[in-house]
Structures are given as structure tokens and as C-alpha cells.
Length: 229
Ligand code: PGA
Image (cartoon, rainbow, N blue to C red; front, top):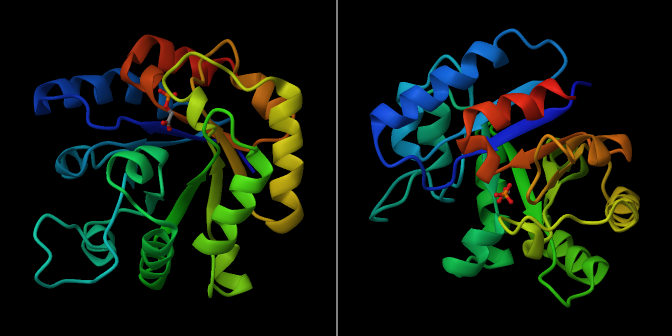
């Protein structure tokens, strides 16, 4: 299977013009690359304007519709042709108080309409990675059948490595990968300050792709990150 690289644009760029320009600059390269599968995860509002790409939403709600001001449902995403959705990113867990119970409901709802969830897990600084991840996976995947579980892509993102320039030393990342693989069989991605200099460290130890945040907003460096794979 080709490595899967997800450009997580987070709450960027601020204008449609900039979003289209960024996309144009990276699409030139991603449409030609045969070695890597690339998903663009822009804010909801830019999704309909980037239809040429394989798209991934950054979040979703769990109900299909109803009186839930400000929410976007998996059914709505699926209806406009989106295939993937990030669920449980640490920024959602930390800034928006998303609990594992909410994440579990989102996963079930996304799976029910055929979206492929990218489930993010990882420890904060000073926490034990294995303990945190085991707890998150147990709660997030509760009540989801083995068959459905196999459709979910787990991303290990140590919270302290996100947007900080800190990288998880290969040995730690390898140890955590082995730990997740013991209880979970599908592909596992890495995320946290990934760039062209370190992407292959993670792929070489067995991660099958990466979530790229900050660097995905700089077309030249993002393209380089894909080209070095
Ligand atoms: P970063 O973000 O590459 O800026 O660390 C990764 C992510 O949050 O998914």
C-alpha cells in the first residue's frame, strides 16, 4: 500500500483565494506522484472548491441532521463526495473539550455512512504514551465491530510534537507503533512536526503515512516532503 500523506490545513488559509492558490501549487505535484497517496484536509468551507483533490474533512458531528447549530454531519460530507474525516485530533480534544465518548459517537456515525475515519491518539508531555493510547483506543473504539475497526486509520500524534518542531525519537515512535499494532491491525500514521527531513524516519520504521500540519501550508516544503518519500 502507498504511504498516505494528509495535509491538515487546520483553520487555514483565511481566504478562498489563498486556499485555491495553495491547492494549485501543490496539486501540480500530487497529481503526478505515483508513490504516495495525498489527501487535502481543508476547513469545511473550502472543501467544495477543491474538488480535484482527494479530500478529508477535519471533524464531523454524530447526528445526521437536526437542531445542532454549527455542526456538520458525516452524511453531509458523504453527500458532497468526501471520503475521509479526521476524528479526535488533539486540538479538538484540548480546545473544544471533545471526550472519548463523543469521539466514539463520531466514529460510529462516520462509519455508518461509509466515511473512512482518521482517528488521532497520543499523549501530552510527561504522560506515558502506552497508557494514554490504550485508554483512548479502548474508549474511542468501544462497541465498534472488528470489521468496522479495520476501516479506521489510526494516527499517532504525540501532542507535545504537534506544531513544536519536536520530533519523537525513532526508538520511541517505533515502540509506540509496535504497541498500537498489538491491539489494532489496520494502517497507522504518524503526526507531529513532520517535514521533508524526518518523514522517512517514520516511514522506515513502519508507519504507513503521516499527518502534516504546519508544513502543508508551505507549498514548496510540502511538495519536497512528498518528493523525498
Ligand atoms: P504539525 O501538525 O505538522 O504542524 O505538527 C500535525 C497535526 O496536527 O496533525
